[in-house]
Amino acid sequence: MQGKLLASATRTLVARLDELARVTDEAGVTTRTFLSPAMARANALVGSWMRESALDVREDTVGNLVGRLGGPGRRTLLLGSHLDTVRDAGRFDGPLGVLLPLAALDVLRAQGVTLPFAVEVVGFSDEEGVRFSSAYLGSKGFVGRLGAVDLAQRDPDGVTVGDVLNTRAGGTFVPPQAAHRARDLIGYVEVHIEQGPVLEAAGLAAGVVSAIAGQTRAKVTFTGKAGHAGTTPMGLRQDALAAAAEFVLAAERLAQGKGPLVATVGRITALPGAANVIPGRAELTLDVRHPQDAKRRAAFARILAAGRQIGRRRRVKFGVEVTQDNGAEACSPELTKVLAQSVKASQGRALSLPSGAGHDGVIMATLAPIAMLFVRCRDGLSHHPDEYVAPKDLGAALEIMVDFLPRLAARSSS
Image (cartoon, rainbow, N blue to C red; front, side, top):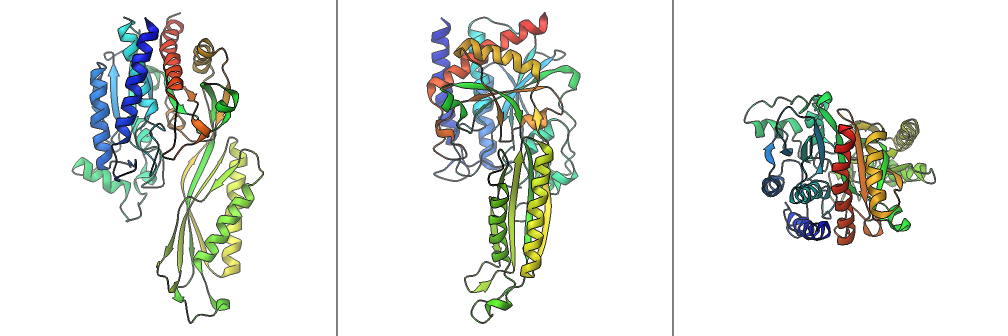
């Protein structure tokens, strides 16, 4: 009986992931950014599926979609992930953690299983930070930590997060309080593709996350002097883009061979941006990650020191603005133990592994204990349209979640 229910729910999950991937702001690719028209359509679509699963649905003031099963006054388990995407994204990163819990609740309902606690499935409005280069706007709003620094972040057109939220509110946006009191929560559990090759190398469909790496993001600028490309001698130039190019290579060199340390420049803009003008200004993003906070901060400082040295040598001004700084976050031993039991029951072995990628769990951990289930993805590829999870692995992850929820309920009531 359960086998047929799981198979049917897995087919529905695959179809929904495919359908949601077609909801986009850019034709021909999957792109959904914070409070964009595509995000509104995505919330409407996923909200309709939540209602089919008998959830009460609401949308909060920062665009998070919330479906609740169970009345007020009950302790609550949060399940979820984000519905926004990177540009030209795959279909699993984020949405899997929203749609798979719905499938699990459907299977349990069909089996006549009633949980002794409430469940909320949350689709966060911004985790990737594509538009404003500052991630977790959705989960920060959910836990009541959306602050002035977040609201002041600007997109490439100079529009701030606060501007967007004021428009949405039809007046002055007031940052929300936490959606729950910490004592009312059991925890937050997120299902996510691994975004790495470890599970595939181990021949396993799923694994449990031990901790999430810390992450620092910054906007970096080099300001030189624009000039005519044909009449300014090479030795007299203050080329901001040339300084930026050297900085990109310096960041790569300083992170190379340092184990789990990674440093990335993901975007660069040269101004004024004309073929016959020496760039007078270059703007870059910098992303530095490491599972140990002290090593991440030290690496970030070394990279910035290299930037200042480049600026002095090339006679251009170096500037930096930190837009995000999140410490490494360990997963809850208690929740992870129960999740590992379900993983072991499904595949005979529960591999524990850290996450080098950031997740909403980093922010949710400020409100509740967290746990994460990683699901194998082909070649460890993510943030790419070829991102892929095999249906059999989706089915395995669904089986794990269907086992986990009653197992957690039994533990909570014992």
